[in-house]
Amino acid sequence: MKSPVLWVVSLFIFACTPKVAENVPVVNEPPKVKDNPVTANPDCRTFADLGGYDREQAETAYILYRDQIKAGRYTEAYKYWKTAFFLAPGANGRIKYQFSDGAAIYKHFFDNTTDTLLRRSYVDTI
Image (spheres, rainbow, N blue to C red):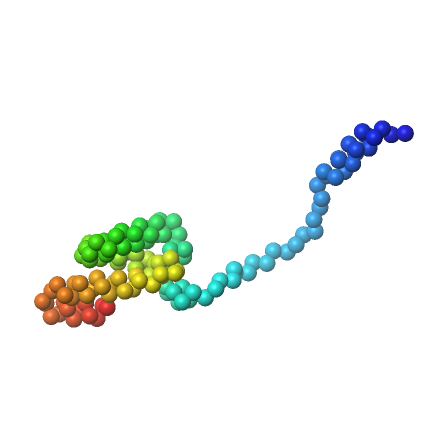
């Protein structure tokens, strides 16, 4: 007659052996994404659409230009806004004020010049 310890040990050995699963084919389907009004346009890239250095550069420029806008320093904000806007016009995909901030910057330029041609170019840009 077998001892109960040997029977328990053999039970554990059998229970701990690796099981073989059947091969399941992998289907490479794109993930389902909800339509976001900002990112529904393929030309409206967000930070998530960028990789590595471009994403870091866009996020940094976005933060810096927003700080300058809040302080009322539109001329200083312009170079950061331009970088953030052209790299990722959709920002994080949930906010839309990057467009209105650009209009505010160009309005500031418009209000602070008397050159008619320059003013006309600012209106065309907005």
